[in-house]
Length: 431
Image (cartoon, rainbow, N blue to C red):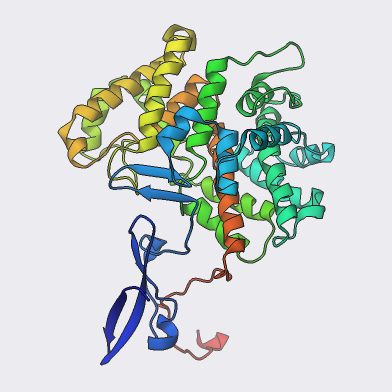
């Protein structure tokens, strides 16, 4: 038995077990508090509530630490790639050479989707947001792959996980092609993950499309950095939906919908919209920063709910952003160049300004990811789709971990009721 916290309430003392994690974070177990003391806890937004024990990811927001399965994000970004990291998150260990080769081959050769799935796109409006389309199509996969829906069959779950990871780039690219009226491009089994997505996004049947290696590398890095981030809103949604014994496809579909919100995955889109606003006004990043200090406008892409230091992913993306711009050259970016110039100027001003330094408002992952997506030519409404593509391994890893947990139970939060007490029905003539 470890440490015990004691709760004094109405003349009685209740012992509450204290659990300590690997990194010495502590949590009071209140699972028996209601049955023993008739109490529940109130924590709006679950900002201080641990919903589970997990070995997938560790974050220390004060120190700017992010680790996947114990591996520092900076080291993974430097030495690994998205597909290898997906294996790490799902399996818990880095793959051997044979496992990595087999895993990569399986993902590359499961990228096609059933031809009838294309009819799902045809039933949707062409101006539908790609996130709505992707959520619908991923949800529809449960009707096309009814052979692998059992949540407690590990072999079938693994098959569904492979299908999701392999087919999501195809689903995502098709959502874009459908919106602009272009033919769907089939995936190519000889291309790596990010490269394959880019050729499906921007290629046409008219001529070969060659993906620039720097672009593919930048996108792969973005996916890797977005792959996992602990119990965020969308990951918690995947876990909650999955706790009802819903299948993996429907759980991931719900996660996509959660990520769509502008307070979650839509933040990088908000960064570009802010840059476009600055460009449309007078193009002055300095004036915009001054207006942000008075709260006349909001500076998007700075600060983070978890990180009270520099977002470790932002440090990595800052360098990637500089490399991508250097490789392509600002002059080749056309009208996008002005937005990038404003972004870089905005970053420089904010990093030197005591107002932002004192409030620990550093550029976050959304600030740089939006710039990179823009430099890659990705349409703004596809930004969050790529976030979902990156987050897929983390979602699946948590869903699988939850089903292997001996403490598994359906998610069912409590509440404090604030409505009327018991009332009598009032007949219509007396209302």
